[in-house]
Image 1: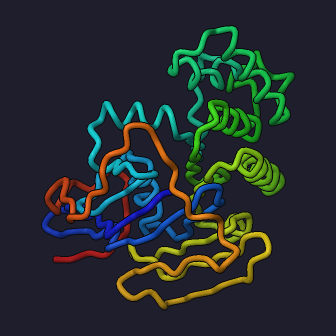
Image 2: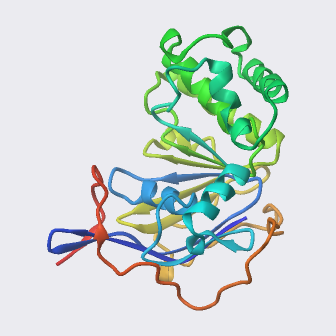
Length: 289
């Protein structure tokens, strides 16, 4: 389970402050397929980066299980992501000099898994995404859809508890988009993994159990529509961004228990002063003089 408490991210842009995330409070449940939906500049990618520990918040908490990843140092974060998290990227992010098999087996190599075992697991995973006959192909020998399937296989091969997908179909045609989305959702459901998808496309959001809609760094709606659940729409009903969650048929709220849990932290956490530099290429957010 991922719990976000009073999350705020502010970047400095010249003499102005850009509020990328404005006091976000949300819980994402174990086994849930959750979509974070928003246009460019809404804060959706910043939120994903916070959830994955790729950026630090200006203040607030991001708890995975009972561990506040916003408080972890870089070495601990790297080990944590290696053990519990998988990523699917819009631009695939495959190593061009490696074969599909070598790309998929890489997360297992970093975990210290022996070559024979990791290659067997990677081969099986490539087979499960329909690329059993492409194990020895390099990225330049594959189509965009095939490269993204390799990326999905790499994300799931180590059986992470959470998979983050950032605009995973942004570079794909319609037919391949459908295939890729069905594949990711199927794999997450089969292994009871939490899948968090960031997209600007409402059609991609249709694959999710739940859609969290961001505008200008704020949650404006939180829609739950899992199996057997009513379609719940809560547009503009979030006082101080308190998220309204599921019906009685929601996934259980048992926390994900991870090793070496930190004690819960109640006080507000400030990891950096407001006014961190805006990352290159970032846009949007609410601007304050």
